[in-house]
Amino acid sequence: MHYAQAYVQSDDDTELDVDGAFADQKNGLCGAAVAGSVVLTTGLQTGDVGLRVLIHDSEPPAPDPTWEDVVEFPFTATGATVELVDFEGDVVCVIPLDTGDFRARCSATGMDEGHALDTTEEDEISPDHYLLEFWPHPTEPDRVLRTASALARRWNSTRGTAE
Image 1 (cartoon, rainbow, N blue to C red):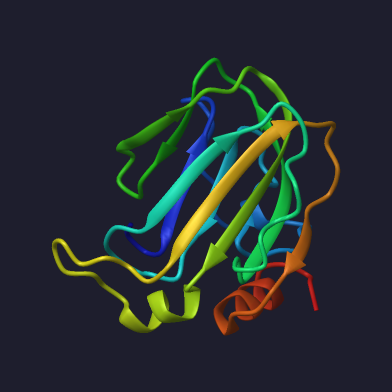
Image 2 (image 1 turned 90 degrees about the vertical axis):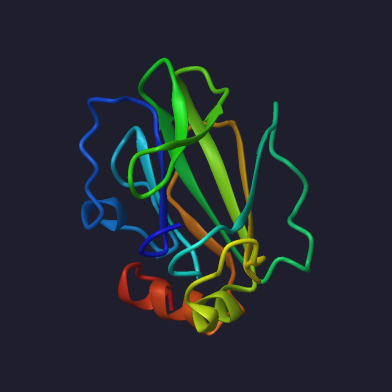
């Protein structure tokens, strides 16, 4: 993690637009306004965070209450390969999605603690963790399901239009 960001990209030709990624969204954690890409925001500024990616055939159950911050957003896979990449463009993992429309949910815990820590040392475990889930779904606007951390409240109010 660098600059508290990672990205999902489904087409190498998609120009990453961090500011445009949050246009007309309610949430400020996952910018998905540009088809084929998502800007993921973390609490930790620099270092490794725990992030798990799950693919579902249909909408998963409601998020566990231990997840402090939860947002959902549309994602359109525009290319043959969908990848999670770090700030420097290095592939973290391939996300096995076909082209088409999906719903995604990002659940987070420990964002405030990660933000306070700022940077992890080698072999240090970050206090913030994330779950990113995808399932086939027609496009519909993003929504904020839960906001408990001060950092998520700040991003939702400055990048998104959530109250």
